[in-house]
Structures are given as structure tokens and as C-alpha cells.
Image 1 (cartoon, rainbow, N blue to C red):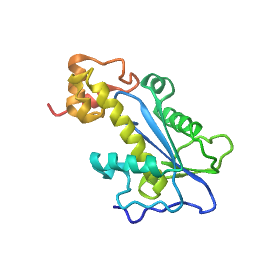
Image 2: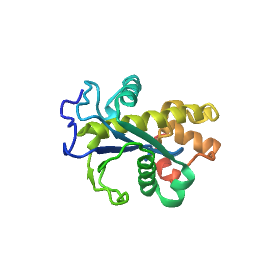
Image 3: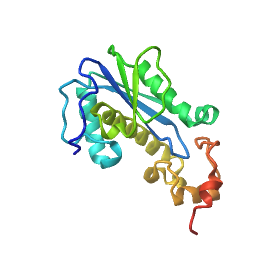
Image 4: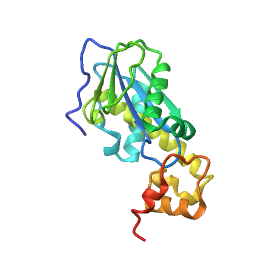
Length: 202
């Protein structure tokens, strides 16, 4: 439980919390979520998704989807990541998620320190925002659970990479599998596997 999470930056704004998952992965999409929470929202387990167990993340996903005034999730695939780089792909995913919101809003809270303005909506980037604001924490949970769900399904087609466990992050076994079997159509070609290979302790 994170008692330091704030309910909003400004009480007079209808704020959208934004976060993404999958930036550091070697394969699959980057996924972003946008969440508008009620001003009085409160849940004792809500926190940065990285600090929660898979079980708690999935429990909170249900709560967020039931209680949020609006939420949306958007995917940007590995081919687009290779074309425009992961930072731009992450921002694109956030913009796509915002596009899908069905409730009017007037301010954006973004996890991290980089963002491109969405139309003329004012925004603020907050470093480690998923551990500071409820709406960003909620977005981090949706982005993480939706991406994990997608990768686990994809893992059934490519069991040798053990994506069901590593979620396509650069673990030793994932890198070893790439070196042995090559890459799939879901791997990010712009990510240099050899750089990770050098760090392996065989």
C-alpha cells in the first residue's frame, strides 16, 4: 500500500493519468493506458504496478475498470517501434489511448519526463509518477496487465522464448533462445541483441 499516492494534481481539473508498459522488452508491443478516476477514489492496494504481485495487479485492474470514470488502452506494435523508436512509439500509444476516452477532460498527467503535446490539452510530466498519483498508478496497472495478457497468449506460439515468464524482457534465457533460434516476427529489430549478449555470464 502506498499512502503517499495523491488523488489529483489540481482538484478543479478533470485529469487523465497516463503510463505505458513494455519499453524495455525485446519483443512485442508497447502498451499505454489512460485513466480518469473519480475525485474520491481510494483503494488500499493501489500502487505503482511494478511494486505489486501479478495477482494484486489483476485484482486492481477489475476495480479500476469498474470505478473509473473512463479508461482506455492502446497498443503500438514492434514494427512501428522499429520505425519511429521506442520513445515516439510510447508517446504514440499514449495519444491513441487518449483518443479512445469517452469522457471530457482538461489536463494530462504523464509518467516520466518526455511527452509530445496532445492537441492543446495542458499536461505535466512527473518522474516516477506511478508512485505519486493515483491516476498514473491506475494507468500503469492497466498497461501492464493488458500487455502481460497479450504476451502470455503469444508465448503459446513461441514457447522456446519463455515469454510466459519473462514477458519478453531481456532475461538470460530469452537472449539465449534468440541466439539459438533467431528472432520472430514479433521481435524488435532495432534492439541490438548483441549488446545484451555481451552481458551474459555463460
